[in-house]
Amino acid sequence: MEDLGKLPKLTDFLNSIPPDDEKAKRRISILLARALAGLHEAGVYVRDPSKNILLDDKGNRILFYFIDFDSVIPYRPLTLRRIARVLQHCIRPPGRVDMFTDEERVLYIKEYLRSRSKQEWFDTLLYIV
Image 1 (tube, rainbow, N blue to C red):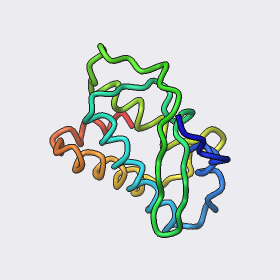
Image 2: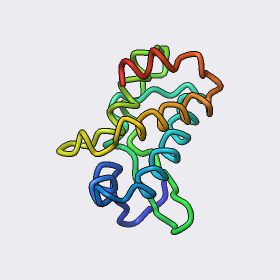
Image 3: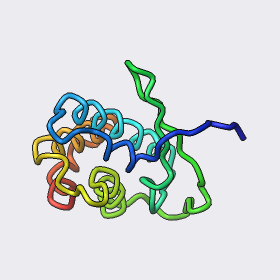
Image 4: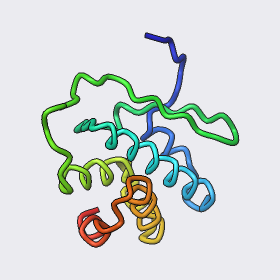
């Protein structure tokens, strides 16, 4: 266990981004997609990831810390429906569900799929997320 200090949760971090800051939203959506893809490639399914992701904004890069894995369900397969639920849960912060435009959500989904080499899932995930 390591003391990470006072780092914001994903939802708090997203809520701190001004609605018109397209560059910041694009950056976080790409990095978040890659982080979630890595988690899923490791076979980890967490029901409520946005509550359990801390971010450390190091200026030119963001570090994601996945915490409290007591809700990890190792025996459940990562179905498309579960993946879509996680992706949607992370990109739509409470109170700002329309924070990301359709174009930004498409970029997020494409980056996730590219990171996992699963581009054939695009139409299905786009429909769900």
